[in-house]
Image (cartoon, rainbow, N blue to C red):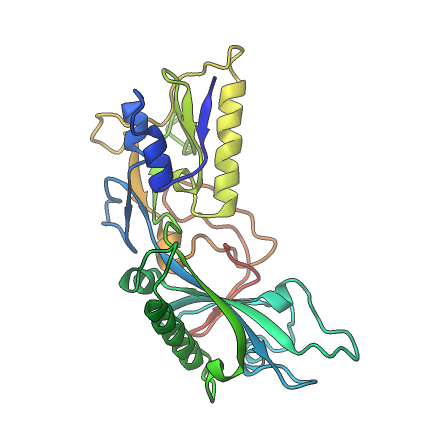
Length: 302
């Protein structure tokens, strides 16, 4: 039997804590925080982010003040539905669920509801962190008010967003985005992108081993699958385990610069961007992006 850990955080740590695969388990120990030291830190580090989904009621035949503000950021381009927020330290991303899923109202429709997703910064998530399974009512109210006020300042809105909200749901994403990446190189060029303990038949895949993105997680799984299949007995050699090497050749955690800057992982600047997975924590492809205090893009990591 072979076991693949495709999860991280406390659950993965507990699953492997009492097994004989000690070196492998050491990589699954997790700390939580918005940043890591310049050298990358000694443990996997995950940030915490608040996700606020809210619905607003608009005047019939007109968009909400939020829609109007977004349209000014990208005049003439209705396909832009996600913006990276750079002018408010409490927030990082706003996405229109209505535009994302093309829920344009049909002619004569009586519906006048718009739905949005708002993500906080990692620093804000840490400052107001609570038990994510059961957030206290007073903490929930405080976080919602502060996130709405920050959005009003970011978009320079007149009036209170709370006055037009008809429903909302706040969720703390406690183990959110890895802000460092475990890097090993079997071929001394490309990062391996996965961990495999050949002695104990257990492996790990995920964004924390290659790139803080959905693409990074998928590619990590593909690479481990290829590694296992290359051996006729499905018993390939170990890859990516901790070693005693202290120079740059040894496996180590490095900062994920993309995650540290955006707070929500590596975010493509266009739908055509191609990720190139390097080992410097700055995985980027070619794409267009625009910004003047408020960044904007065509998608984000959910």
